Length: 201
Image (tube, rainbow, N blue to C red):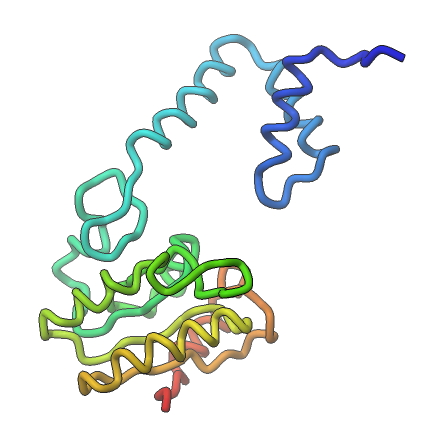
């Protein structure tokens, strides 16, 4: 029996299905919606994707995503550069910023150490973190990786590299469920985890 769906629609659905958290049924709904858009809206949607893809890159200091050479946090003179909060993804920074309680700076690893998935320490932004610390004004590094096996392993690995430098390394006091993620934590839980962080080792 021949496929009743037009090939371009199938291809578009498959592209949506490649996005995280999007199943095939949702992908098909999105594809049908995009196809039904007026030409102007469809072009604006496509242009927004291409513009984001071409103009967004990593901040030259913290590795967060930005369209400037230096991200807004790193370029803010009011931030406390002696405290670095280390997170897995740029989305985690957004979660912390919602609390309005953290005034230090960040460092984005863009992943976690996971030998089972073939992700080794040199594949995430650990070298960049150590380079920042070597400049001498850092007093505390907060390991804010998620409370998963990979998150814990990454926190311990980085802690062992930093501790000999005489810098305080702390870990969030998670009021989060084990296996949970920072991205979905509410502001109060995240603030309490930050406030009650404890030193590693």
